[in-house]
Amino acid sequence: MILQAKLFLNLLQKILFNKIFFYFERILSNPINNNIIDWIIPIILLPFSTIYCFIIISIAFIKNLNAKIYHENIIGIGNLVLGGSGKTPLIITLAEIELKKINRLVFYFVVMVATHQEQN
Figure 1 (cartoon, rainbow, N blue to C red):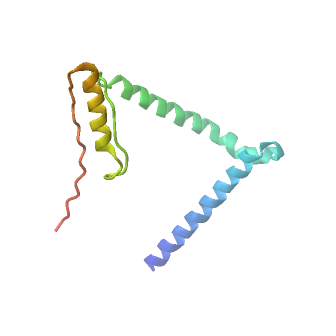
Figure 2 (cartoon, one colour; figure 1 turned 135 degrees about the horizontal axis):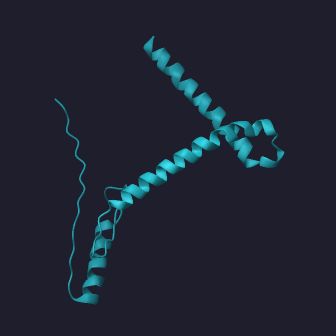
């Protein structure tokens, strides 16, 4: 019974998402051919969008106030790919170029490792 309820809710979520998505796609893709009734929901949602935008900008501003200031140049190298994307050769090449330019080299390695511990 619970599985059927979950499947029903999942199907309902997909249907509602598709209806909402295609509603806004229809309105925003061809705004000239829409009547005023089609614009009621976007006009009602506009104040909420403005409030959300203000909150996000405020959070970014507060994070920027607390940001650390480094006196060295920082180059971030990375991606979602864990291995085989060529990050290490790129770091070695950048280090060789930088070493030729200034005859001294200072590197700070920050390694972020995510571990997964299995519970027994």
